[in-house]
Length: 128
Image 1 (spheres, one colour):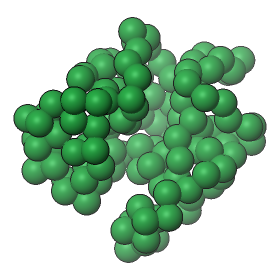
Image 2: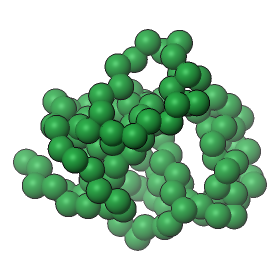
Image 3: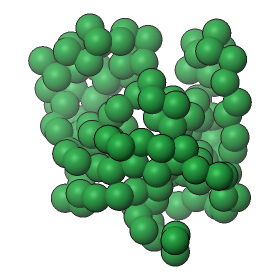
Image 4: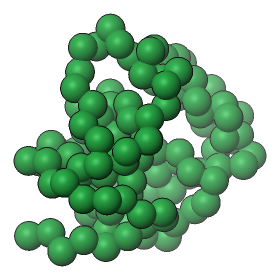
């Protein structure tokens, strides 16, 4: 199965249903199931912003399964729509205007954590 490594707190925010788009500077044609891997790196500023949620943020573990259903080029309207939906979570969308893509994640479900090192881009893991 395909896996994507995401910094914390973003991986946990996806797993918990707070965030439905993952932003990248590259696009993907892949559509289908994907595992969400919480990398060992953290976004310190974002961790501070989401402190109020009192969530656990595991590192170096696959923590959820989702489905990539779309890959949308981030333009001003898309970024603004997301920002209006949730300005705390989607503040970062504006950083990707005309230079990035939003991977639409649906059917998100948490799984028992699997400890493993992450990789760049989409990578494969034998998940049953």
